Length: 400
Image (tube, rainbow, N blue to C red; front, side):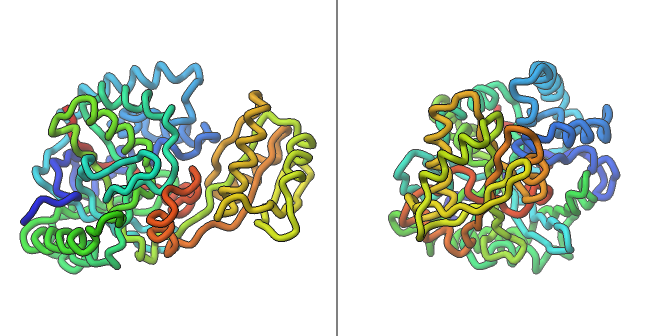
């Protein structure tokens, strides 16, 4: 078979039986979740205790710029030295993953590596692997530094295909014949995770499906893989690869999912502005309204109202973000945060000096055409489901 953009990887997993309860303490949610809810991470640490855990290998963003950040980094350095003693290596492997979400819906995916030569996060990119949101360039250097010093990567990167289920279906049809790697309940109501090692006819079928999909979608300017989650992690990996140009650095571990999967639900990522003068911000936004535009619901302590923004972007979230960026540029003490879930936003907006914004999101069928025609979306446009349905760190790959 010819070389493909997405391919098998040398995967590391804890050396546990598939249903060992230890998996629940190993696997933790993506570091960019619950950024304003440190209590979630404190509960996770209390649940894990001293057991081996992916939490020891990542830095939750809730701890950035806090007194606990350095202690977290020290824990990571120590844990990196112990990874190989507690894991088993699966060479040239693809892992078929089924994630049971709230309500019993199953999201299907395949874990392997993606070729960073085929990925370009720069503005106006026409690469085969393309970001769906704008890359904030000043976020890359600190992430790149972490990657350059790390011996292993854990992916929370999820990449969309538009293969109409062909890749994951090829794996799912033969899963009864495959070795089960893990099968456990995720912590904190995160659902259930099951992973199968693709091998034999199942692996051959999936590799053939990947090759056929990439060949059929390889026209100039066409998106083959669209980065749905974890773009800044992938961008840091790309930047690191451009620095070192080694074969291991050329790839990044990720999970591909099909955008047509019924379990893929786009949820808007809402905005809050913290540490602000609420009447001042609302007065500023009133100047951005029009009679025929894009509707945003505004929440603050004792306030719930709608505004119709004059459209300056094709998407409501784009028009809102442009307005907020303008306000924040002249109010440096205020801060914008990105919130997953209406309930979380409403709770945060009960605090003084906080304004939240609710709005309708884009439909998933619009994604590939939008990116091909318009380029990247505004940053943090959508999330795949709610906070608890995000990808959990489970697999690893050695990167140096």
